[in-house]
Length: 157
Image (cartoon, rainbow, N blue to C red; front, side, top):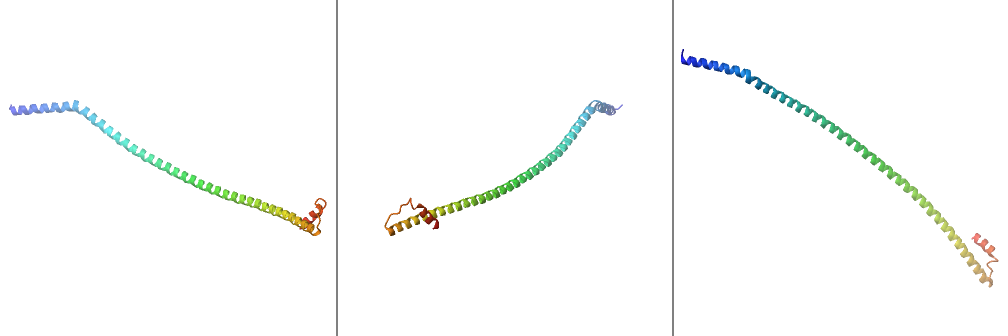
């Protein structure tokens, strides 16, 4: 046989043994590692996808909660404005009632002062009348004796 044929045959047998050894001992663990890596990548992609869905759902929930909070805040503000208007209207009503009461008291005080001034004026006029009458008569009138006369004169004025 020819040495190159023998070498070729030896190389073929060595290659066949190498292929068999690789297929029997190296390829299965390598294939298992590749499949495990593919499985981890698929799980990672699925987890990322579910995380994105969860994030979108959380964002939607947060947006809804924010809308509700704004709605409630606007409702509370509207209620506060309504209550403030009620308080203002009540204060106006109370102020009008108080002003009316004070005006009535002032009117009553004015009437009472006018009556007192009339009484004082009547007394002064009666005193002047008595004084004038005393001067006319050139004698003194006894105030105790003629008190009824003076009261009648004051009542007529």
